[in-house]
Length: 415
Ligand code: GLV
Ligand code: MN
Ligand code: MN
Ligand code: MN
Image (cartoon, rainbow, N blue to C red; front, side):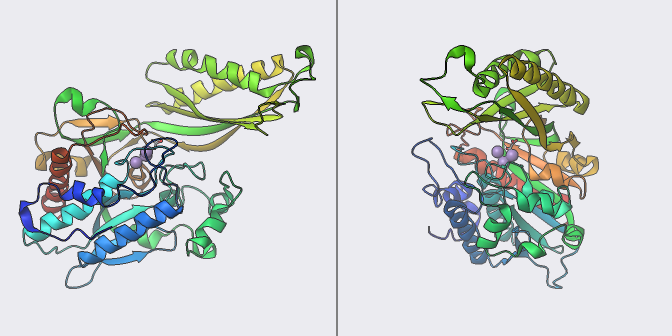
């Protein structure tokens, strides 16, 4: 991984050359794309890359007690209050794309290069923030770092979360050099943030359809995650007659087949099962338990609750039909978030041609929005596909994104 030195205002590939330095980190040949779970070797390598790039730009890097990295471009006075903060995350979903998260981090570094090349010296501190476990792909709860920072999740609950290998978040955080006893809500840190702007690859087709490279975010759809645990009787695949079975995987499979029709009955609802874990998971074993992770999203939080209630009801009926039982546990729930109106208006003045789009994807910006003025920028993804290796951003669009971010930091946020 080589350092991408600042080369003036002529660069047309600032962002993609930054990303090319990490193109081999966390590649997943089995799934395709990248698997960069929080605090894995891959994610730790990306954190080292970020620190090196920030230091190469003369930024002052610190990792806070919650594992959030901050790279500061200080003012001569050293005052960090009311800082303008931009950034995103470096962890990925299993088999994810190259841009979800890293694009926002690389664009923030590139925006610093643009501002430096313009000879600017901020009179307000600027920071690049990198949040851990945005995807929740290791510990199940998305935006875990920003939730802990803001107190949106209790620390005890967060520290006790386990990954598939049974490691707790507390253990893994300690292995990454943090002290779990010192983690938790950080109102002083939040009070330093005057505004937060996250740039992110668009995860749908909005900008393709509009023929534009960059959009301003308006809102994030309310979304949540639930775990449905079906329990039955584990048994032998060859000796257990069909009429003698209590197979929880049969109930879970039937439920998954019904979820699309439940969701379609509520305009705009999205319901997904992307993860299913039969326990113990042997080919010749009738499972004793199946965990089904359900993701539901809708702009109206009451509709989300209704969809989950209907799915839970069906789960109960289908479990009973198989002589099984089911329990439903809410893992996380985030209401619909509208970004700060004043900040958004200022972005609209700076980027008058940019359309305004909402998103069905969750972001740390959505968690921070309850505490600080927050906005988002989206950069066109020509495939319209995300959370998959086909996710893409053209070099030219990435550059337009970084320049838009730099413009926002300059003229809207008082640099
Ligand atoms: C994370 O990207 C999510 O929206 O689930
Ligand atoms: Mn993301
Ligand atoms: Mn994502
Ligand atoms: Mn996300």
